[in-house]
Image (cartoon, rainbow, N blue to C red; front, top):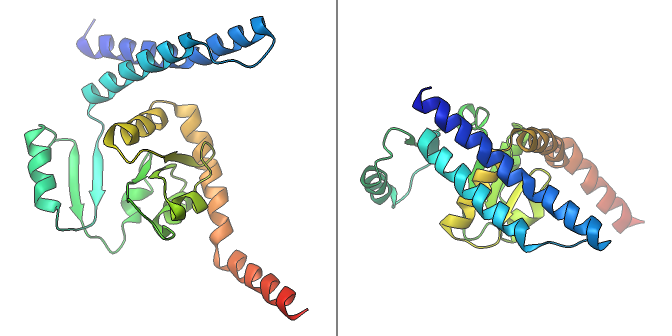
Length: 205
């Protein structure tokens, strides 16, 4: 048995442990005849989450960061200091970034504030689940738990936990992918034109 097999077993065990929290909650709720969240739910959540995080770190899933900014050099130095040069790639500015986005398992937007967030709609149109820090613009677009996740705490650990949840739950990721593509259609040119037509019709009625 190779180290790869051991880690694969560890990752599967972590996924089972993480998923078992819902079984624990269901059993506790059935026993009490009401919906409850027992303390064991959090033990399974934290324990399974940590196991999955350890597995993700071992795998070093590739991360592609697109765009430019005045923090680029500091980010490069941080990546090198953490020994992540082989899995974190700074791709710079691209006129057509969707060749990267369309192949991604999840898209992350960690702005402290977004007025609307076109990039989220564009990622969703590619069928990619999104993780975004919560702000007025992102809350308008993302249906949390359906086409992606919103992170209320603008902190690295909270964002990492949301990414970890989607990356390590293939059925959830596939479900969010399909929903994201469908929800993005609300912002198509035709849909927006029809909405304008409805508003003008009501205003002139």
